[in-house]
Image (cartoon, rainbow, N blue to C red; front, side, top):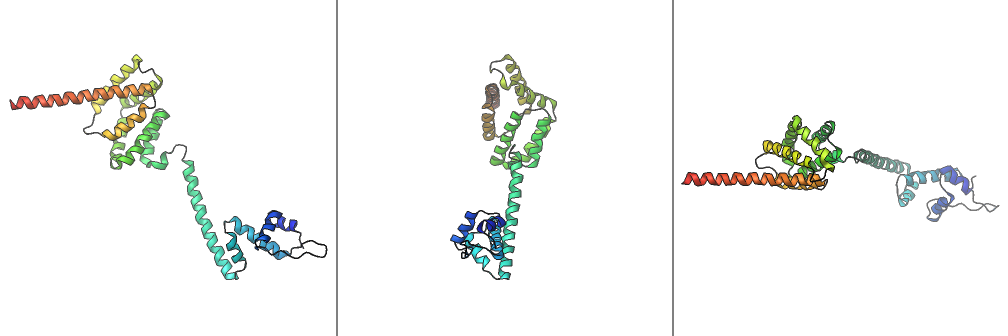
Length: 255
């Protein structure tokens, strides 16, 4: 026969837990013996271990009480159901673990593998992690605002990085991140970037998305903010000149 302390030890619970189970009627409380102590038999130990195991598995105490009084077949079926629920929870936790391992970068959570591969290519070219993160943000915005454009844009990006001049300009922008906005070197870099923009300008473009991306990049560095502002101003001047030229050609043709 076991004392309450010995019973609790067999199941790995506290004496307070045993008394709680007595209080709610989950575990019968034996009468005191002639010496004034409550003594527990082997069945009490078995029942307590069952209660603790089911409770640890997340089974509500009210259901545990019903299970302890169930017929063997009913108890076995309930255990099968509980096991299936635990397996589902385990699978869910494994999935959560996979997601947690990717939280550091956040890329694989929201971006397709081909975009992640492009970001990794940028890292391999020596482009800074700050610039890669800004590029990642641009892809997240594109997927939200214009998902159908993603495949074509990926091809364009890879083609651009096949060009050594594009890579050189990315790396040069990285170096300028901490420059004073009025540093003379920035003027030379702006001229190089403007020449690249003029060569690679696309008809139509993505004005809404580009405005969001430019705003995000400008926040990262005063020097980058000036680059974006000057390039935008020059691009607008080119568009204005092109419109004026077209209008002049129409006037000439009508006269």
